[in-house]
Length: 596
Image 1 (cartoon, rainbow, N blue to C red):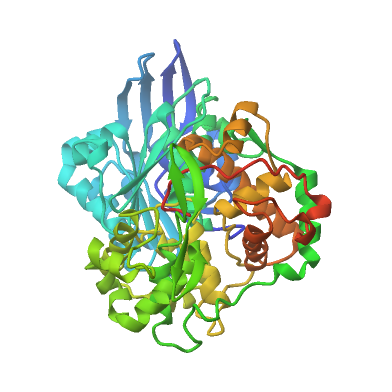
Image 2 (cartoon, rainbow, N blue to C red):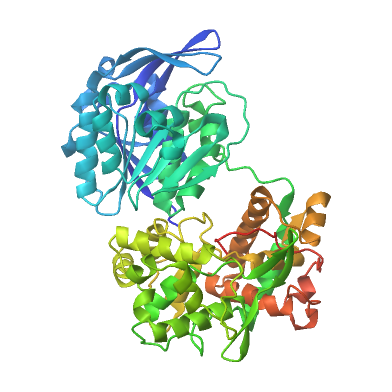
């Protein structure tokens, strides 16, 4: 969300001797160097806090030109240096590790970054020193990331465990995660913290509290594995500082780390070419011309005016229960369709108060009734204590039964939301107060929801973005936006159906296109491919149209009536008909998820 986020890196570059593939190479290195260069390449402005060699060795001159390097002067021989051997079976052996001037770093060398800034403290050879930096930076309001290494854990496990507790973001590889937690699947951190585990060619895992999200890695030909983990750290932190969801930050970081190992030392991070991007699925693609034409329609369409979320199924402006209504209700905005024989059967339509209501319309109406019957149950405390039977009773239709097709997923999300908010010590009002006091309120709001159950699980932040739009568009203007801020694309199944039928996203794989047309249940891999493409397309439509995401979202949401699930599209009623590809046989991926 920010073009140039700031990152402090505490840790010295080094001069290394690498043994790989039967040859030996001298190279610039060190966790501080790789982390800093990767963050800079990912778009951050980076300050390195470490002793600065004078004169500057030739190996480090390219990095010195890119980075703001601050610290006391030292002779080049005083820099840390390592001798590392890499074996064909993937083993790594440190033949020699010299700390050098690393211990000369002082807290007073660190410039005042201010609350909300980001910093990374490299896995120093002295974990006590790393812990001290992490605690002092965190106490100053800085978002702190830290890393580790296996010998340090073996020698100082209790100290490293305290470093984990002191970090907002912690990074390690799979072996190190096992040393700290017993196994990868046992990794868990406190609410509001994120733990990243790199897994080599198998990608990475982001653990948010007790929820894990895996991301894949692209296939590359490895030349030098040095710095892959540190490249991941720097890239991920730069993207987190820019406002990405942790899983999206990990996805970008995995691609950059994979690119780094294709060259010797930090050379790939010094390239002038664009940084590596996560690969797109070849089965789907964006149609740039169609995107441009649809954006032109939306630019002037009256239907692209942001909705204010008022009306008969919403609280009146000024209603004191409105925040709990929207926070708890938006968690449930998913899964309004029936499945039968592994195929999409029909949208959910149910009667409430004598009105036949579809999907989210039904949910809002039921939640408004809930606020009138028992408003305390919609607070985080009330949601945390909710059982399945009470949830079903509150969501009952006129016939007395809860009609939501996703069944127990709904009360589970309610409890996850309530328990996470309680664990973080938050209420809707306090979360908004914290966000609105920040320099970038929307970025802070979304980052906070990345730690809240029911919202955090979706890397594409559909429900988080929807809630932000609601709170900013309501008459109360609960959430303000900073300069240049706008919510990310809101991509649900209605939006995906429109993208496919309009032709802004094309499915080139005939097998996949046929599966979508038959409305068959698809795999998570297929759903991810289509949804990621739609997310990118909608973001580009917003940019080219000049409309807010709230306006673009409302345009696509209204398409559910013009281009519905069960009847022929009413093309004459659609403003985009003149530029539409009319691929009306295509359907959104049929995939049960709590994201949308």
